[in-house]
Image (cartoon, rainbow, N blue to C red; front, top):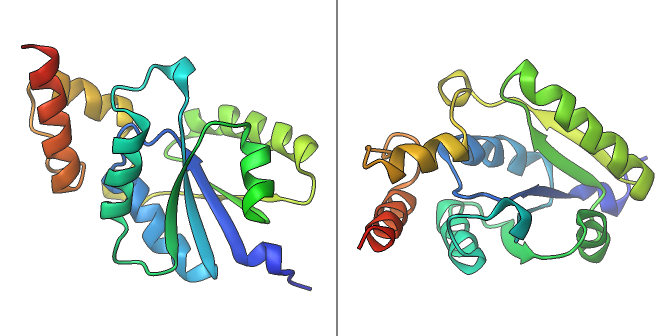
Length: 167
């Protein structure tokens, strides 16, 4: 039996920045749920290149074509955020086998912290399998063109970020 909780999913991440690979997962997951919440983690331990409010704004622009997808920033334990929004599913992306071990550990920990929440793994379309936020940041930082990997607003924000950093 499907509960109301299972109709709400959270797709958590730092999204520093959101990429076309992330958007591909949102595009494919959105029809599966009544609500899909992109949870943008503050993640100060990862020292994000972009501030939380900008990452949230860029993610909102990137998924604006989905009326039942919302974007929220959070600075708490993921388990608490999931409980606060009443979700029953965590959505995670797997690009390669190398992602699996880390994601498996996260899913196992989350199963202990929030046992009534299931983790759903999706793989990106082949053309996005190599894209990661860290690679996009590095290419942008070195002045490369990232327009094929991120939405236009994200490419512009990254370009502006690195111009500020070097001026």
